[in-house]
Length: 205
Image: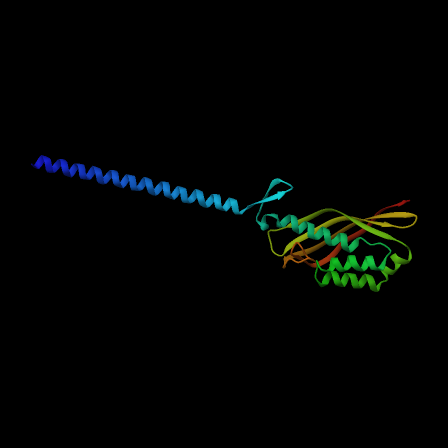
């Protein structure tokens, strides 16, 4: 009789152990299924499918912060191209400078006012002079906020008989602001100033 009770107790312990192992297995499978479903859902949220003339195209989303250094450099480049690309047309000059001033603080406004007071723009118009700029590189330091930026570029002053090339270097600090149609990158240039602006060469046309 005692042997029978011992066998029953042993069988009960084995059944209990098997039940616990089975429950642990079920829990593990359920946890993995939930994890896999969550990962799949997160990946699906970052992917959009677009139907273009019968073709299915996939568009993948990325974190905006991953691309901020590139946007910062393009912001600085865009400002310089707008501010220094000038043709002998008062409306074109006004439009370009107005667009540039959306990207910077009062330091750029003061530079514009100084050029206007010195008749810089009137001289361009009267002498039929065009001016453009090519940004060679933009050095960005993201270790400290606001971000310090130095821009290296070359200006061309195109007159009727000559073309003058200048080396132009400027510096500023960038801080984050709200994005808008006039400021798509969401940066504002602060304390902008020209560090160097010297003639490199003058060529006859």
